[in-house]
Image (cartoon, rainbow, N blue to C red):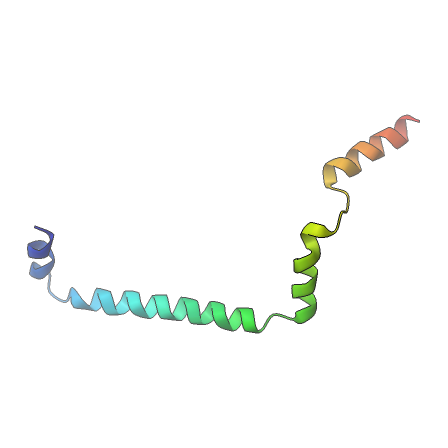
Length: 69
């Protein structure tokens, strides 16, 4: 059924070409973006989960405790 509907639409073949072009352009853009990232930024993001810094919730609790004393 879908084949009959799609074949009755004139110019339906261009949709496949357009979707391939969008797909290629998006992933080419992402590849260029990833290659242009600075090494220092990548190191910072790589170590972010292991920093061991305080979270905002812990900071607010410690601030409240300091004000109470």
